[in-house]
Image (cartoon, rainbow, N blue to C red):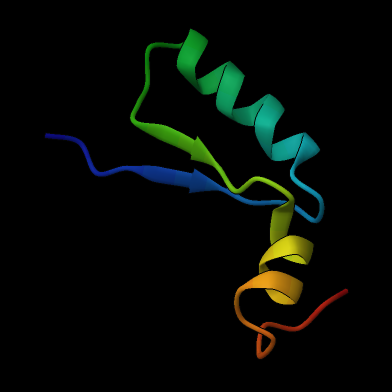
Amino acid sequence: MPRPVVCICHHGVRSAQVVAFLERQGLGPVYNLAGGIEAWSTGVDASVPRY
């Protein structure tokens, strides 16, 4: 079984586009980090640097 891939960008928009592209290519499982690293840093783990 393939290992899942999580695509991450600053706000989650570009990584969502990458996920859609990879799925169209037949790859998966592929996931998008909704809200990007910004949301992760502010809502889940404040030790992750914001940029």
